[in-house]
Length: 134
Image (cartoon, rainbow, N blue to C red; front, side, top):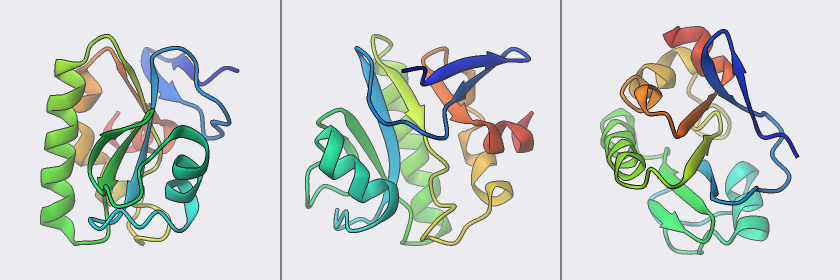
């Protein structure tokens, strides 16, 4: 299992996370109702303990980000996530390409929201986000 790597000084999360190492957290996009019915949300629910009905925050070995409720909601959710990651330096957060599947956003639209989170040493972003934010 190799969920993280450093590429050109950037902390990159794997695109294919099948299991988690000690203290790793799977960060995925869901909806505010926590109906984890498809994509990474379903995978998080089935494999890493994402609680049904919880659409934002830490549950099990996951962190849910609501991505289906619009730009402003997503922006606030990423701010909450960044603060959580800051407060939990003992955890390693593996961010998937949240919002870039069922929610229909592009990496160019979502990645800039993670600029502050990208500065934290315990946050790993997908390469497609690093491609946008540098």
